[in-house]
Length: 532
Ligand code: 9PG
Image (tube, rainbow, N blue to C red; front, side, top):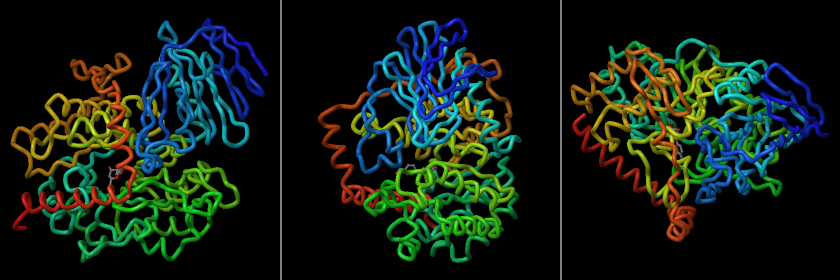
């Protein structure tokens, strides 16, 4: 049914089952909802499905190439919509009008998507009818109204200031062990961090959340040591994944999310093996997740970085036909409750279904000690891949989530050791942390020059929040910040990209890569930490 409205002086035809005015603009109801503009928009706001997925304004006529290889797609975007070549995004879409105003169409329900079809913003829901908000205004106003409409539906995480975090990932990667973490802990003791977070590398397997041989004293002892040093102990887990090499996978094949043919659904490829997902709609899985989170609490952790959460919302045949994002949200709620008052950082997480149940949400892909990896941008068109530029681009486009969740921009770098970011790029990451108010680093104090250490301490001490002056510009303490150099997408080289994309989709190549990375990491550990 067509409903005609005037919003901010613009005549808009809205297609939906029902439509009525509401404080934010128009409230629509339907499995489909569409807004017709009297003229073509200039740009479209594409909102990525999960933390790492590309989120950006794109030209309305631009075709963003599909990332390669297909094997990794489930880790980067919503697999259901990868074949859609129109500008499109998850839950919300917006059109920039020629005068700079924004027309936004945002869903208040899960399993929803918005695409730009000529002059039409078209929303669709995978399940039944949902509510949609349509609004026109400045960018800040339009997204602000969408956030305030989501708030009563989904809630928000804690509202106090985010903790300052030391995280093991971006210096030690999986090469952590008891001795090395003890050494770092001694060095950061007394520095103004609230959380010391142990990342990937402590666990027996992906699915087997027990200490591995590198932690003979166990994780409870590790947590006790961190607490004794004055920090809240933090722990990384990927609770919704099961790797084929894990005991969990062997013992509970019936827990895996499967497709219509009964095959386990692919959750991507990492750690040298294919990844599978748990079916979050199964009561035994929920009970196991609750038990796992209670165990993490009992070990003594007060901060949980729950990663690769998209696995819980992948398309597949969920028990009792439960919609995929509803199943995920329910699993997150169960984990949230079992974690009690621990801080919950959701990472690799479907964005809207996580709101209200997590305190922090990773806003973009991983930063890296590099700005841009030409393999990923120029050859694979993969803008969800690690790299500071990808991280800044997507996080800056997610700042409207601030009233609903702490937006985690990932770590900032201060070191020059093992970091190829130039001073300007490092500053951009620090500025993004000041904009988000979420500050973390993985820098190991002994790697820092005296000046770098002073900069880190100053960064942690300053509580100044930057004020927005434009889409990509801010001011902090009288200084102008501009994130726009991170925004343009480097266009891939077609032919070579095709070949590299094909190669990068072969498990044997990925396994080989994984082995090479592990070897390089082992060499680094010998060079940097020999003799401990
Ligand atoms: C630990 C890391 C860190 C990091 C997380 C997450 O293969 N991949 O595409 C891929 C993407 C992201 C990723 C790892 C692999 O990083 O964001 O902070 O915790 O896991 O493994």
